Image 1 (cartoon, rainbow, N blue to C red):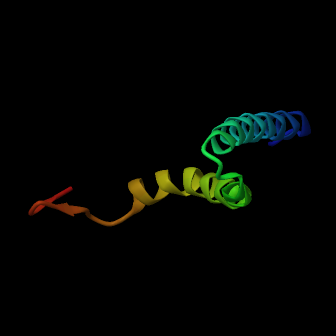
Image 2 (cartoon, rainbow, N blue to C red; image 1 turned 45 degrees about the horizontal axis):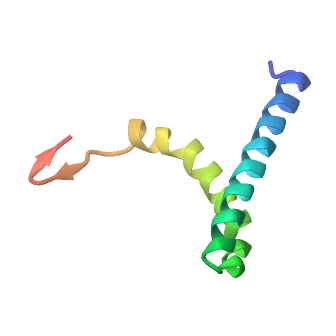
Length: 72
C-alpha cells in the first residue's frame, strides 16, 4: 500500500532533481548564449521520467535482440 508520506517524499525528490537540472542547464546555456533552448527543458524532463520507468520493462519483457548476427 502506498502512503501519502512516500508520495510527498517522491514528489519532493523529483522537484529537487528538476531544480538542479534547470540550474545547471541555465548556467550552461547562458554561457553559450542559447537560453532560447531552455524552452525544451520541461518536455525533456517528462520524456526522461517516462523513459526511465518504461525501459526496464521493455528490456526484460521485450523480444529477442539481434546484434551483429547474435541473438540475445
